[in-house]
Each structure stands twice: as structure tokens, then as C-alpha cells.
Image 1 (cartoon, rainbow, N blue to C red):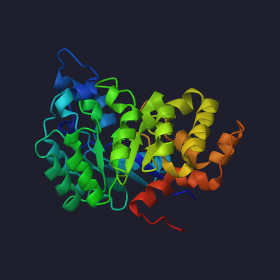
Image 2 (image 1 turned 60 degrees about the vertical axis):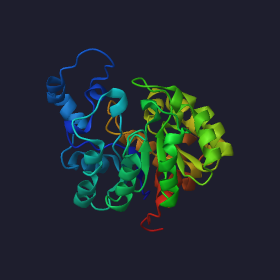
Image 3 (image 1 turned 180 degrees about the vertical axis):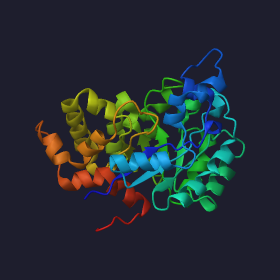
Length: 308
């Protein structure tokens, strides 16, 4: 039985966690925040007071653990009602309520005055095991303002996951893989995860990972590829594997943000890669499937997999 870890999810306790423009997907104009946040569909999809919705989703999908993190959009989309420090401080309660189910990554914009102190407090007091950065909010990954966070990540030996690829709400250029080539060159000991495998720029991402072996990727958003064209999905995944190795690819979904398609079919296809991809003459081994769906993330964090 495969041990499955989702390397990319976002738990949001309540509307205080998010910018109204992130939910409305509207970059300009007036938004009625109270009306928007009161919508039944918004409440059901985005907000989860005690984590029970996430646990049900994981159980229904067949996911054993999930990395989850806040995202600091505030300087780009407008501040949430809660400070980013107070949002991060909520995650220990989630982990305490559901022991062994969540791996928490901190989230903070490096341009904030207290960014380094917040990240260090997340690591030393709140149990963070990594960091999520959103360059699309208005900075580039190699900017000097980011360096104190990178130094801390290396000091505590934790990875950083970046949003990579185009971003419809903010800036796309900072998500291009070539900027992460610069970062990986300057910080060869930093564990870098390219979230979404850079979306449409995934072949550029592969070219970076091929040469810079401290760069990894996760597949959040690729469920759209799977449901859109299953054969092409497996061919693209096989090409990615051939370029970077199965040991540099991790399962991820971005749940619940990408909630317009079922997660279980995507998870099952990756768990059963030899059979699922084999229908299209794309060859994967059972060992490669196990690595992608959980073992790679577990090894990065020293998580013991039952039966291994």
C-alpha cells in the first residue's frame, strides 16, 4: 500500500486568513467582502475551522499526510483581516488536533519588516518544517531581500517551496524557472521546490532541475492536465521523469484551491503509474510511483514510512 503525501495544500481557518481579492479573483473594482465571504460555495470550498474538511478530503482521496501553509499575498492583493504572524500562529493548533497528518510550512513575504523573525519563530516555536514564498506578489527569488530567509532555511535544513509558473492575479515573470536557476546557482545547498512545476513552463523547469540538483518540483495543478488529456499527461510526466528523475518529483494538488475536479482519480493514477501510464506505452516502475506519491517528500523531511 502506497504512503501518499500531498506536498502542496492550503488550510484556511476562516475569512480572516485571506485577501478578499484572492477569493473574488477580481484584481480591480469594489468587492462586497461580507457578501462574498458569506456565500455558501465560498465557505464550503475555502474555510475549515478545525481542519476536519481537510481530513475528510484526505481520507476520501487516500492521502496519508499533507504539507499545508499560509500564503502571504497581502502586499499585492490587500491585507487579510489577520496579520500574517497571527495566521502562522494558528497552525500549531491544527497539528495538535490532527497529530501526524499535517506538515506545516511557514508563509511570509520577505519584504515585510519582521519576515526573518517570523520565519525563525515559526521554526523554533510553531513547528514549521519549511517555507512557502510567493514571488508573484512582487519580488524575484534572487532578490537580496530574500537572502536572510534562505540563510535561515539552510541553518535549519528545511526546504522552500515557491509558486512557479504564470499567475493570473499577480505577476507571472517572477515565476519563470530561469530565475530559480540563478537562485540554485547562488545557493547550491538550499532545498528548492518549484510548485506547480512552473505550469506551462514545465519544460523550462525541467531544464533547470536537470542541471541544478538541489531543485525539486511538485505536481499541483497537473490534475488539469490529467483530466484534460490523460494520454498527454502521462507522456508529459514520462518526459519530466526522463529529464530530472523520479526522485525529484512530488505529488501535490494545491487543494482546496483547485477544487473544480475530483482529486482521487489523479491520486490513483499516480499511485498506479505502471498500469495507468502503461496503457499509453509510457513506462514507470512501482518504485518510481512510490517515490513520487510520498517517499521523496518523506525523505526530504526524515519522515518514517510505515513498512519501509
